[in-house]
Each structure stands twice: as structure tokens, then as C-alpha cells.
Length: 511
Ligand code: BG6
Image (cartoon, rainbow, N blue to C red; front, side, top):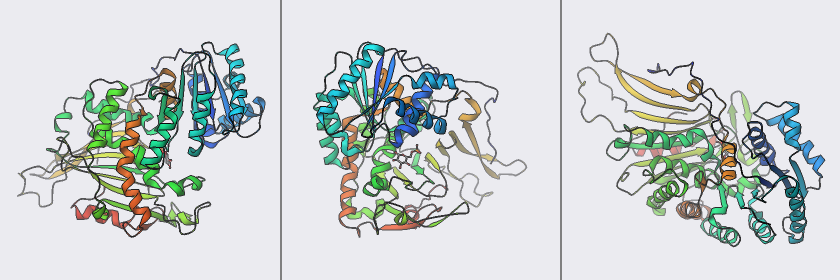
């Protein structure tokens, strides 16, 4: 299908119109020798640095259990940047950046070692970071969040603000998330806590709200009267990689649904916020979660399908089954795929199904939100066209190729009444040529400037776990309630997911 509209290809646009954050601050990264720090945080901080988006006065202090000194850590950082930097690496910038980096070995559970950490921080701040502002970034295993936040909370700080950034997963069910919130709140107020969901930092995810509320033509039809259903897909080609220790205890519902998928759902379904400001936006998202109809456990199979990848071939390469991956328990029942049907019981959405699916080792890496509109009410062209006319579909492709497209029916030239489906599309890459801000860069800037809009609030965590926990409990206690179906690596997922759609007279969009 040919695109109907092409935006000017000559247009140059810089995505970096963000102003430098001015408050000097120390960024203390716990879990500094870990994978996330080296693959994501350090490269993002480096990009911010060379684009003048970090404060003029800052330091990065890496903290982890491994014994190392500043020089050794700087070598690791340099190596990580040489492998994984998305921004130009010239020796001069690299040397300058690395000079802002320090390291401190620490036993997370030993309060005494935090005193030594505080002293080191204070000395570094005296030289390079006036004001004493601190961001504590917890990039450690979730089991350590509670003890680290307590020990940070107990350690001294002279003046300045103090913020704590916590990576997902935030708890593993409603109860544990509540406990963790309570523990972190003993020392930090909600406005000091930044719970990360990196999907919110993605440009196309942020664009959902702009698209909905900066264009007058879509909002009047964004409801049960015009929309048949919504499909939200996050398909990955990657498997569990080296994270089986975490993943085998989590599975796709905790890993992708409680956070990323729920965020995509909320942005699609929420009401316009009173203002484009953190609490107003988050209030509307939480209202969506609270309006989601709890899934009936008596009828769970009609709403939830879970699967696990078995071995298979992808692009000529043979991949092992999930159960054969290193670190996965033999006979593991952990789902690597789920498809979930939800209803939002409010005036806008009553009766419109939202189909969410996500899985690993699928055919294609593709994340999208597809809004399928209702069929035309009356077929005017019945005499000419025998087959059903395809509905209009509005699709936000989040990744890998950021795009917004709308399918339309048009007359085929030369025919009396032949129709052809065409696509009106907007591809980010055609229009925005300036370097874009990576999701981690975005959330780091927002945390430095104290903006919570792209973070998750306590009541949001609570509401999403409240929805998922009963389902998780049910399937984990009784594997017959919703048996894990095997699917081949490189396929579109388990057959039961297709059956769920067929029962509803619908189809998944192709991967
Ligand atoms: C992470 C999950 O939060 O998101 C991973 O833990 C998943 O399992 C990843 O692969 C997907 O993120 P992205 O940005 O690659 O879509």
C-alpha cells in the first residue's frame, strides 16, 4: 500500500531543545558495576554531558559491592562507553567526562559503611558540587531496595535536596509493593521518589498525549461510539538473555504488563488532564486503572492466555527453548508471553475491549498501539464490492520505526466502485532529523529538574498490582486455571491467543 501523504524530507528539526539543568548535584549510582549502569546509565549520562544537559557542577559516584578504586572504575566506564555509546566519542570529551566520576565500594546492608560513603560524598561536594543536592539511583537487585533506602535515609546530608530513583520491578505483587512503598516512605516523601518506567521516556510514548490532545479531530471520536477495540502489542525477538535469575521468578505479567503495558493502556484511554503537569497527568492515569474491570477468575481463560517459548528457528538461526536457557529452573512454568483482554468500565470506554499482548522470542520486534474503528454503518457499495470493507485503523508504532498511520479506503482509479486500502502515514525519521533523546536520558533530565510527569506514583503502582495480583495468584497456585502453552521461537505466539480473538470475532494484527 502506497503512503498517501509524505511530509517534507528536507525539514531539519533538532530534538534537543531542552535547557541545561542548573542545580548542581551529585548522582550516586548504586549497582554501579552492574549491567544496567554500564549499558544504559553511563552512556545516557555521557550523551547528556556532551550535549551540555548535565548541570555545570556535578559528580557521578558509583557505588557497588565490588572492591575498586576511582581509577579502576573510570577504566570500566571508558570501556563501557567505547562499546555502547550512542553519542560521538572523542578523546577530549571522554577524558573530561570521566574526570567527574568516582567510585566507592559498599556493603549495602552495613549501616557503618554508609558513614564512610557520606564522608567521601561530603569531601567531593566541598570541591565540586555546591549546595549538596543528591540523586540516589538504585540500579541494584530489587531485594536490596528496602535496605539501601533505609541506610541512605539514615545517613547525614548537609542541606540541598535529596531524590531517590528506583528501577522496576517495584514489588512482585500488591502486598510486597505496598510494603516497599511503606519502607521507602519512612525516609523519603512521595515527591522525593522517582519510580522509573523507561517506556515513559520514549518519544513516541510521550507523543500519544500530544497527538490526542493537540489535534481537535480525534478526541470527539475517541470513544465507545466509534472505536471497536484497541490492540496494544509489545513483541520482542530477544529471549531471556542473561537475566534468568530475575525473569524466572517474574514472568511477562510482572516484567512487561504491570508497568510498560499498563502505561500504554493508560495513555491511550485516559481523559484529558486538567494541566500538563505531573500530578494532573498521573491522576488521570490512575483513574483509568481504577476503572478497569477486575478480570473474573471463573472465566480467566477467556481473558488471559499465557505461553512460553520452545525452541525454534529465527532468521536461519536455531534458538533454545526458555527451559533450556541458563539459569531457568527445569520444568519452569514461567510465562514469557501473555495476551490479556481488559474492559474499562467508564462512560468513554464501556464495552470496548482492550487486547494487550507481549512476548519474548516472537517473529519480529514491534511495539504498537492500534485503535480499530467500527465498520461503516451501511454498505453503500454492495453492488460492486462483495468482500467486507476493512475498518479504519489508527496505529502508533512505538518501535523500532516510530510512526503514526491511519488506514483509509479510497476508490481504485478506473473502476466503477472498487476500493483500495491506503495508508496515510507520518514517520518520525522522515521529519525529525535531529538526534532524539533516549528514554534513559529523558528520565535522568527529568529527575535532575524535579519533574515527575514521566514517573510512576505510589497509587499507580498500587492500582496496577491490584489488577494483576489476583490473576498471578490464581495461575501460580493452580497451573490448570490457565495452562502455559508452548509457542515456537520466531512465531507469533501461542495458538490460544488467536482463539481468544476468534471467539470475539476479531483478529490480531499481523506481526
Ligand atoms: C524491560 C524488561 O523493562 O523492558 C525486559 O525487563 C524487556 O524484559 C524490556 O526486554 C523491553 O524494553 P524495550 O525498550 O527494549 O522495549
